Amino acid sequence: MDEVFKALADPTRRELLDELFREDGQSLGALEARLPMSRFGVMKHLKVLEAAGLLTTRKRGREKLHFLNPVPIQQIHDRWVAKYAAPWASALGALKDELEEEQ
Amino acid sequence: MEQEQLYTVVGGRGTMTVFEIYIKATPERIWEAITDPEMRKKYSFGVGTESEWTEGSEYRSAVPGVVEIASGENVEVDPPRRLVQTFQALWSEDVQKEGVSRVTWQIEPVGTSCRLQVTHDQLGEGANNELWGGWPMILSGLKTLLETGEQLDTPGSLMYAKAGG
Image 1 (tube, rainbow over the protein chains, first blue to last red):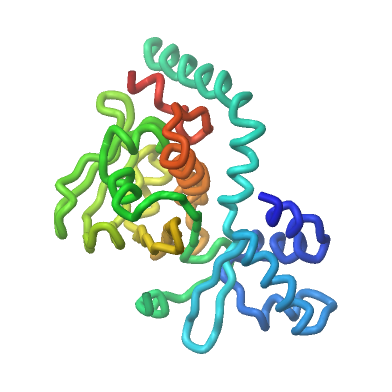
Image 2 (image 1 turned 180 degrees about the vertical axis):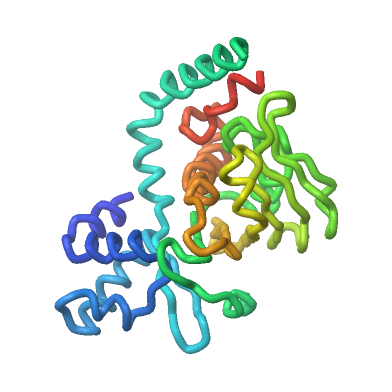
């Protein structure tokens, strides 16, 4: 989890994740074109994000495509937010039961 | 693995999404958690998945009498490493219209852990994000279940848990 927070602590890396959230599965070339930064700089940031598990890659031909992997962020959510979601989910369940009974 | 290259990634969230998690468990345990309906319920919104888990067999994910979630065919079944399934979402009229996509579960040992990748692809252009939006919750819950064995209170484990009894 340390690695996730370190990776997220940098604005450029957050911007890269925003970029993948907007359009998933982008190549290095495409990401590089979006940021005012050298290819080497972008590569370095992508490496940190990959080591933290925040992105995952697939090869397509000669290209490497980058995909946002939100699972580590979900784990952070689960750790500190899940217990607040529990009553919410059961309330929705009760609401659903009620609505279905009315039908 | 190379067959993914056949499918083009397009704009928006693309025709392909990839989710990945490391779990401290054996491939066999992870396989069991994916294919055992009772284990699966604990981290998949309370929804069990029933199947014979043979190639060409059908599967059905549902809370019987409450909600149908998905159905499809097990295209490739290679325990405990790889499971490829077609995926037809059923939980609402909107997602039913999206048609059939594909889900690939890939388990790879890494040291004393495993990397689990779920690739949801062959999605239509601009596909409804509900189709793949549940995977992070499901995978995070799966990790918690296997590593702690505890009763989960992750959001993914709760939604139909009550309705399913």
